[in-house]
Length: 538
Image (cartoon, rainbow, N blue to C red; front, side):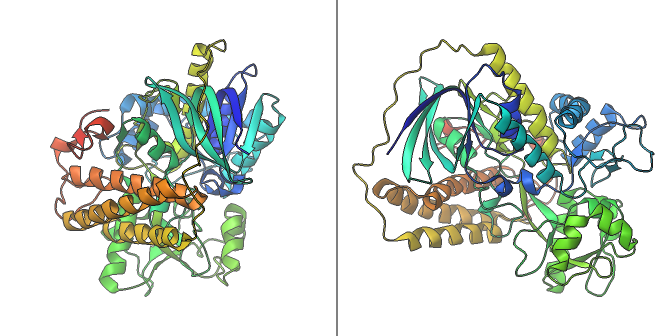
């Protein structure tokens, strides 16, 4: 049976951003965390590389800022970048205080005591990590502390459907309880969206199944602006094997000397960029895509086997074990790799405290567009952003929340006019169609013609999905498909509005970068029917 709940703060999402925000909120507040999937199904959990932070005397906030802005291709907000870079040490210290099992420097080279690695776009070693499973260690550390907090209640297996707002104020949400299949009503004085990105909109992705753009779509439907949705990061190196679902080969492999090779053993990255394998991800992904299309090959190869077996097993134990499951011994042979959709650089527009256009609604982590990443995210800045903005949002809420504020009564979910569906195959077919044409037409390399074809298909799918949504009881697959088609349209319209190539957006129709477009692509819900996009500065 449908239930009603009331909290001071509801955090939608239980990855690194959501759990961090919950832990930073004052213990006096009653907090709910909606967990759509188990902890290991979060993108945070599968983050291998680490967290970028300035910890060594030869490094600096200025250098971290400059590296991030260079990777972001001129669209980063420098004040936000400097804010995040400056907060890196504080974030690492906080996690260390929670017992995060970071890899330490056994050779006593670093002043910080942490082993630091280097990834694409970084000019220094500044990536703090837990072997090659940083996300797993982070997620498990945060989960353990959330469970100890008496003021935090975790709602497992709950999928947010839509936000409820009154007079431009967010007051609650509807959420499907996957265990009993009823829709619950949750009221709150403040709501934090921490639902992650939308890379599941593509056929091939490094992300888990839950990365369906739920928060972006809900905020858009509620009237929030979104920005930079055309900048979808494709990680250059995912394991290519028919049974290896979405397994990422961390950029740290290249940071430690891994080379990208063609099937004949030749390196190719030096011909594309002087930084070779350590060029930013957009450059490496396009280079791999170019070589695969030029030669008609299924993959390229990443080789770290010139390093000692002991080095490889100690630095990359997770990758070593996983590849062995597919009879690939990375100490002796190269790893077959392909690019895959990895990170959503755009999202819901927020300020430096994580506030959105809707009063009482915050967004943190990959769901948000904070100005940190610009047109391309630099490696290991994503977990840093999660931690920095989770704290900022929690601090702002703590300073402003009025726990005596009376919340309005909210209507229960009405299922009186819908029936159970006996045509789930329609949802499955639309899921597959959407992800395939997004991969084919809105991928690493784009053209106006491909984008227009994709937009036409989203229009057709939207009408089918809306009809289905209006007549049948909601299901997890239907809710995710409904959100994915919204996100797909936002990506396509943003891409059509940017008539240049910059960062992660590369189009054959406008292959050069133009000063005219050195600003964010902002989509405004109220203007959406009249104009596909409005270009302005965040």
